[in-house]
Image 1 (tube, rainbow, N blue to C red):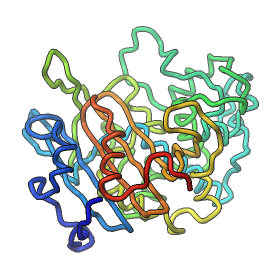
Image 2 (cartoon, rainbow, N blue to C red):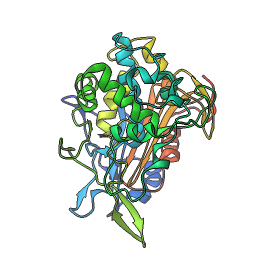
Image 3 (cartoon, rainbow, N blue to C red):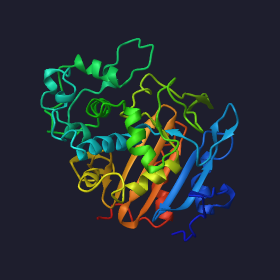
Length: 354
């Protein structure tokens, strides 16, 4: 276990760490991200204090911009925890119930979705068809959350009776973003900004809509092709917000992590519902799924994968320890890296119980 003093705090922002000054064990783990290659920003927190806050590689290969802890990456499915929190805020406000039928808010859903509730959408137990599997052939534009609803309107079927099984569903979280809009009277990006990002001081976090906002300190996504890194920042589904459209930095996520330990955003029992074992799964390292979080013994975690980006956040709440790895490349997936960093900084052994 590494025993390091917390980084000094300067006007509320931790001092950046020169990657040459981090421990050799950390350098070895981040070797693949060093140099003129797509990079990674990394944060390790204990008791809210940053023990590691550093970045390797490049945020923008073409412009020669290095990655930093302030670089903003597309979070991909790390977004789901914010979508879940938005729904829980509205439940806390009394604007909706988690037991509401999805059709109460989205009445154009087909008859097969009649039994689907918001709880089913949050816990991946709705059985709704994955919109990515039924995208129109020859699609020449990006789809948005409203397009997901339009696609599902033509799918009068489910994979299984709602509530009877688990199947990870991007469709469900796209629909939840639309529910947030209809229950709050605000568009989804505005709700996140006013109810989550601004109150928590997540200054650069944004549910990004091209042409409507700017991503500060943007990291661009890349994939390997023919032995070279090629910019692959967007796909036809990259504009869907509820399942993966937030951009943020590790500094933003430090503030988010702090809010998961107290009542500053969500009060109990609402906050606890994010981490309750709502459904069992057969996925590796995911005995249970909460609301926007995977649950594995003493840890809660989630990965995020979309074209050009691979991310992971792992939390050990009892130890007040968290690791965030954001990267702008299609490989490798950083969940094993986050676990390895956690072990260096005192995380319990894998599979440890609560």
